Image 1 (cartoon, rainbow, N blue to C red):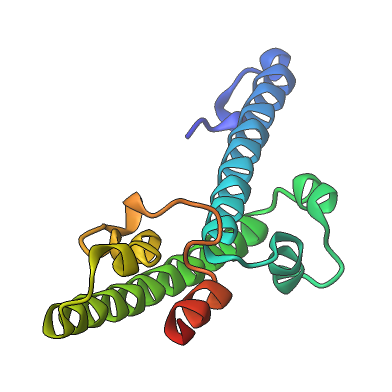
Image 2: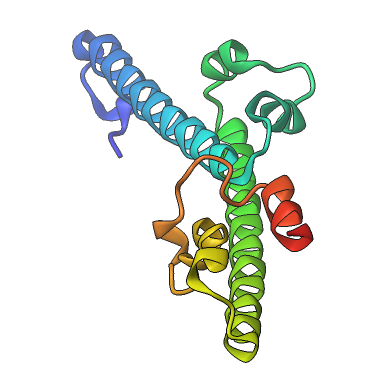
Length: 150
């Protein structure tokens, strides 16, 4: 990191200003990346994005988040990403468990392929990794509940 105090006084204002501007730009890029990641996770999990942002700070909306590029805000967004990723992992394991059980039952009952087909959207994720699951609402609580009720 550049030490603004070691510069000559004539260049100090320019150097410190551009350094500060660069730091703000980097933080803004990181902030946008975090918001994009949160949005993507919310889409897959069927979770309300605005409500998720409000959990970080109840008085905040997307426009205020973009104005607040503090380290604390970036930390809070990072924590939310980790929480959503953990939820995604848990739901994927549940989805894979349900799908595996279904296939085992189908094999025991000699269930025709046409009856199995209506569950294809869920059973095709048995061997999927977390990164491969990115479809809208595929891991929403409603989708998993609907699968369990079928």
